[in-house]
Image (cartoon, rainbow, N blue to C red; front, side):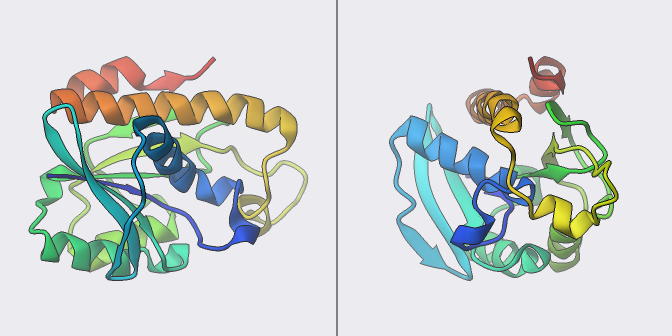
Length: 190
């Protein structure tokens, strides 16, 4: 079973913020596939469904971002999910808005949600989709910036990015060929 985790913060005030882009992709997948987020356990909301011939778990941690590993690690243990089958979607300040970067493994790159997952599962050897949100340019602090909602103009771009990332997830689930999916989906979304 593949485990697809979107990172974000729970609560209405965090909806459509830069930090919640991982949740947005999971929500988009659930809506497009006509699934329901129908389970809650281990500090996570999730569903287990089939996409094509593959069983897949779509997950949104119910912790705050910085504690995401407290949801992911117990779920992986309970369902006996190998790190090879884990894919995490999250916001990335080092990529400009509209960029998507898929990677087989890597460091947390300063992202506290990823730091938590890496710490709790004991490895950084898992797949991820980094979604560019850019950096603040007006002197705004990084925490204020990532917790700020996208403007209407930005949302036009981000809706395409969310759809692009969701297609990448579906392609990976259906083919299990992450190298090919990386080649196909890495880059700027227009």
